[in-house]
Image (cartoon, rainbow, N blue to C red; front, top):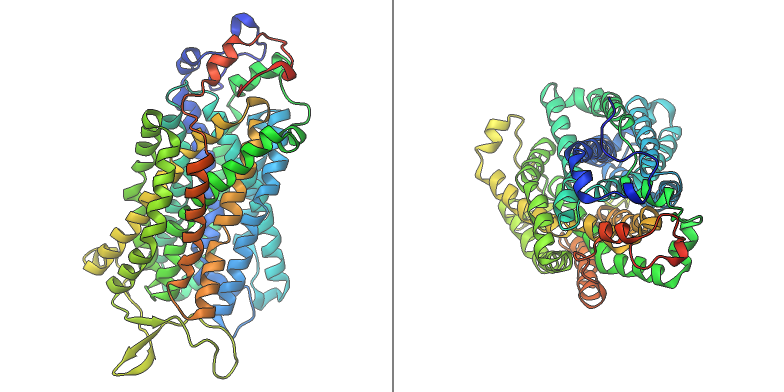
Length: 516
């Protein structure tokens, strides 16, 4: 039987949806079905980055692993850059055809692309075709994710009652971090089931291939879902937009909201998210020389401990507002990053003074090999936490210090990310909501945030300063704090249900006032 998650297709003045009715139609099934699919898409998207240091040498010419890592991260970044294009394409479909159908298509594209990586031959087998195919796959992943998040956030938000939107949508916000956590957990399980050589040779393919099973389960669940009740209502009443792209981005009142949402919310949220979770992982592995499996474990535990705070801050935003929490999160991140990363370096005990000799003395190639001073001489640092046994790792005080420092960063993430779905949904009218909110979200996360690992590690490589990579997220988070504090409007009092109930069926879009 299909999930009773919405109302019949025919909507009249007597059947205008209401929060009470939708709540009776099993909102937790709606959240669960949406969250599972979104979590799987994030898992698919992030195993690519989680395995960067392990598989990057396999898809590029041999000779310089650091250069291969930067090339791999460039391919990783492409998936983020194209996300706004996916947001425009699938956002338009979502506003014209429906929320459900748009994110069914994104799920299939993402799952298929991810599974292909698991079967893709390496550079040693097919040469330059390997990185080219990898780039094409990454583009498909980015396009799919560009349409996924907006659909899931809008779908859930349009089912839940006014006054609790921050709480309910926070469960969608968990999915990004949960997807990253599961990707790390799967990688750790596979790594611990075989030797390091086996994992580097072929075992890394297993997490990608597993995606086939996960996507199949999610697709089955999503096919049973019905359309958003608010979308059904505006469609039956003739209130949808015939040209959502034009209305969202050529009308100044809407474009202004897009720009303010980008620079006053999502740009800072994006860099805080990727600093606290991805850059922390790359910093541990590539700069502090923490064993790859141990670094994955450190980050995974920190994510697991911090995940409940997405709901805490989402629910709190229903009481004190979205804006205040997001701005405090950006400010805390901006002023804390350098002290936190210095503490991570001290905790690792690596005594790193520079990330590289600026160029290799023979080849002239950039490297990211950490350098330490021992007895006055510059030497390569040794691997930190060289454990394969989880119990041994957790018995090491260094591991727990690093877990705590990453945990603090993820708390900043929960502050800026927990309330943001509710804010974005409330900021834009229903007839262009999917299109309008998806663009600033994916520029903020896909461009400002997604380019962060590449930009930061490149800056470190160019300067030899292991903290220089933090200047970029500090600047963007500070910019968002200033712009958001001055221009961002508080939206928690927006009542999208109440406005729907007072609108007449058949009322023209041009007659409507305010967010609907």
